[in-house]
Structures are given as C-alpha cells and as structure tokens.
Image (cartoon, rainbow, N blue to C red; front, top):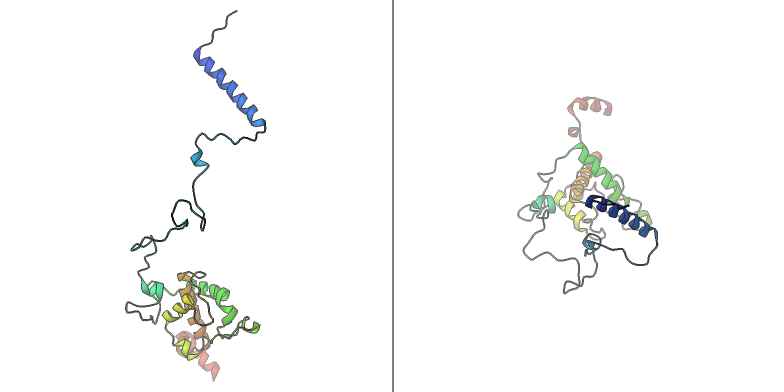
Length: 212
C-alpha cells in the first residue's frame, strides 16, 4: 500500500514533529547558552549611571553637556522663579509672578517645612527644633524683624545654597516646594505678629470687644 502525501500534508507533519522535538529539547537540561536568533533585544549595549565606559576616551559613561547648549527643559530663563532674583541680580521682595498663593500651596509648604525645616527651626519657626537639644547651633527665629523684613528671594537663595551652618537643599527640595515653604514661613510670621488689619472685617468687631 502506497501512501501519497501532498505538499500541504507534508508541511503539517514536519511542523508537528519539529514542535514535539523542540518541546523535548526544553525538557533536557543543558549547560550551553540559549540560541538567540536576534540577540540585540536581549543583550543591549547600555550603560548604567556612573559606570565605566570603554567607548569614550575619558572612560566615563555620563557625558558632559556640549558647550553652549542647554538640555531640554533646563533653560530656567525665569530668574525670579529659579534664582529668586530680578533681571538686575537683586533679590525679589515678594513671590514670583508664576507662583500663586493658594490653600494648596500653603498646605504643601507646611508639609515640606515640617519635614525639612522643623528639626532645626521648630514647628513654629522659633529656632528651637529638636536638633538644638542635641547640640546644634540654634538657628535664628523667623519672628525677628531681620527675618521678617528679608526679601523672599533671599530666603529662597538660603534654602537653595545654604548659609553658615545650614546646608544647601537644592537637591532635596524642588523649586516649587521651596516657594511653598517660603509662603508657609510668611504665614508663620503673620501668626505671631498679626494685627487687627489681618483679621477679616466681619470678625474684627467681635475680637475688639473680647479684648476689652
């Protein structure tokens, strides 16, 4: 009896046989590395940060910026926002035009202040944080006339670059959060040095009567 196979049937049978053989091959342990038909997807020549490079002549993986260029998103042309200074290099008195004082900003500033600032400056900004009890030099109180009259841009510069015993926080605290902290510091100052003019008009009469 002669069995005649068409080309289509032969292809199907060979495919089934090869599939079974491939399945059996996976069951047997092997010390040989797997076959990579396209190894580019598995073995990518990528570098990790701070890793050594055998491609560049200086041996460094991380490359410096090309002179005269600015990385995308790092132009930072708004000096008031990014440096706390105006076009003449003077510290701005108030907040940058791009920063709006909102409840959300104050709440964010309070949260960041309690994390980064209160260990030394205290929760109320009086310079009596827990680190002072451990031998650190007491920082100045935010409620002194000198700090209250200090331009916001100068406080921003101190947070960014540090001053005397205070380290720089440019890497720990983003620019947005620095301005949020400053807005909260000003709120702390108002809380300890408020006048009747700071109270809403609807509440002034009642407060004045209670204070008599």
